[in-house]
Amino acid sequence: MIDIDDDVLTPELVRNPYPYFRRLQDEAPVYWNERYRAWFVTRFDDVSQAFRDPRYSANRIAAFAANNTDHDDAFDNVLHVLSNWLVFKDPPDHTRLRRLLQSSFTVKEVESWRPRVEVIVNELIDDIGSDGPIDLVRDVAYPLPAIVIAEMLGVPPGDRDLFKKWSDQITALVFGALDQPDRRQQAIVGMGELAEYLSDLIDHHRRVGGDDLMGSLVNAREENDALTDDEVLSTCVLLLFGGHETTTSLIGSGMLALLDHPDQFERLRSTPELIGAANEEFLRYDGPAKVSVRIVAEDLTIRGHELRAGSRAFLVPSAANRDPERFANPDQLILDREDGGHVGFGGGIHYCLGAPLARLEGGLAINSIVKRLRNLELVDRDALDWHPTMLSRGLRSLPVTVSEIEAAR
Amino acid sequence: MTATRRLRVTADVTICAGVRQCVLSDPAVFAHNDQHLVMVLQSEVDDHPELADAIAMCPTGALTATDLDSGEEVYP
Image (cartoon, rainbow over all chains, first blue to last red; front, side):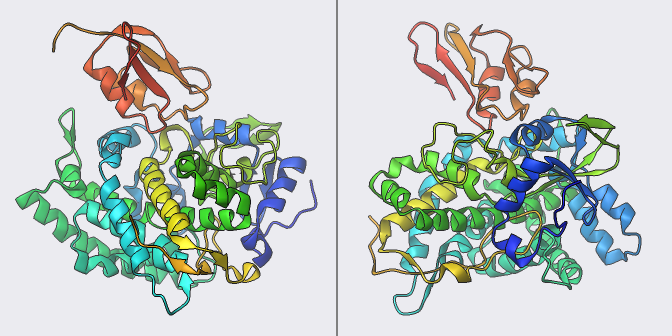
């Protein structure tokens, strides 16, 4: 046993969890945390293999429902929508849903959105007020993914703000927001309103069709299989929510990493083609996925520890991605590092479906910010505000000053 | 389809994340090893639709197919 505090959401660790994770790697790479009643797995090799190992189940909704027996109908509705998410499914259910969705998220399909995403990014930067303070999260990183996924689903522009509100309410529950004690109630309200809205949108698509993502979900067929309305609805909620805060965090943390490493900032500014490699490094260095929850499906042994079936395992990409056994100078941002690769998108059958879209949005947003906002500087490095959540890591705001905003070209 | 091209199939295991989409699309060409990572069963094959599908569905970009004669990339 090592002497370490089991609370991983202290204000200090919310700001910077990395030294804590390094200690776990060094002293207890597979660690039973009594407070969270979960095994923390932190070494790169262990995390990366566990992601691919079918003995780690992703279905934590069943366990969650069994442990929380005091629910009412409204909360059961929330759980029902979540239970249809493919992130919480194991094969064979997962296989079918993932196949149907994968064809809408191929690199090629996502790449066809590039011109439109570039326009949205540049409009958001154009709209940054010249008088008031600039917040890169509020002004660019937050609205961008919401607008893109809403457009992909065929949501009319006038309804976008509603989408953002529901997304926030549901996010608080799924990511376990510590500072929002009413998160359960909020999630119920948000999910109810969102489900109603999406039902109408699905109805509309069933009747008149549409060549957007919603249209392809409604029409998705694989070997005479199709998604039920229930599954289409759940999947839309997943896409909306899964593609939102995570992408916001990628852009926010990526920009912060660049501001903390002026030499790398300058390299990217003078060599924008580096963005592909840079994106991967942002995901490794300070990516949005801090912890991935798995349920041990059958007894297994890892580094001499016996993990019993039914116990929880917290796979920690944030730790793995800075494992000194895997990466040279792991705590340094090196845009084109030779020992690349990371588990920031997870791995195995649950590897991030939206990875190509995250890369596209993150790349275009960061390159445009770097190019167009001159003499970018942080307002206050010590005052940065991070989401106090267990599973995800991201900035709530990123206040900066600039000398000038160049016109898009 | 005109005369069938011969293709060389390559997989980069250092990029592969074990997502399994290729194995589901084209099990004659792709399998997973005991580490749950991609393994190419036939490195030289006739062009066929399942192969195109398998390479397109890979979210990591670990798979490529090149024309055996010209060496030009055919997929993705």
